[in-house]
Image (cartoon, rainbow, N blue to C red; front, side):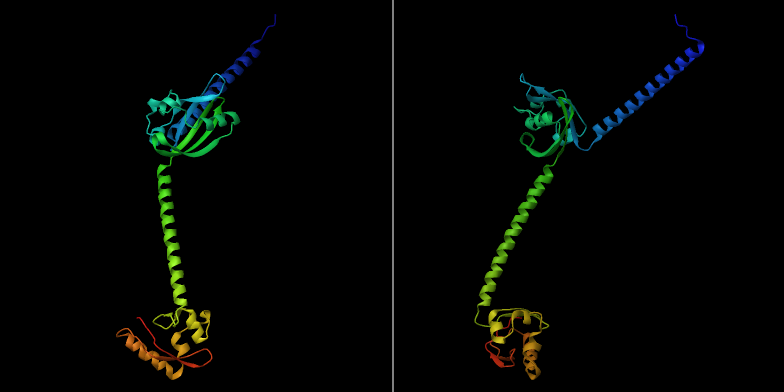
Length: 269
């Protein structure tokens, strides 16, 4: 029979006490960690639900039981915690088939998390859903009600489509008017109060000898009425202070320096 002396007894007792202390310390850490995870679970802004898969006789997932939900579950779904915990999905959501069972079956087979956005008709809501496996036969979903985002997005899309259509119609109208103006047999142009040319039609190009890019941005009066001819422009501007000018004869000088009588000249102030 082996005899253990007092020194060895004290050593073993010290080791045992140390092991007990470490065990208690580890238990406290585990409890603190569990508290942190529970706090995170229950206080997340998203809805969270834990589920356990229900299989048929062929081990095919056909339903799932709701094990637990967090505080925001009710906010996103409108369902009370106490009315869903422990119930099958079909009973909790009052549907004939477990919602998105095919997606969760895929999760069960592959172990890979899934994400999708969906419209859930029984609640008349849109959701974004992330699901991941906790362990074999159990999974969690993290979800948000995105109905307002979806509806506002659809409204914005429709508004953009209307604006786009209006812009295209306006562009077509402008192109149609431009074509009409371009083919007028008389000069048609846009002139700012300071004389800056903003647009010209093709007839203006033909009569003056200048291309549109040579005219636009230049001063109409300085370009076509050099010297004493500029007095015509002064007289015209004085008349415009009083009323519109109709059938007002003017002489302009074209690109080659040739004088041309423009009649009639229609000016709208």
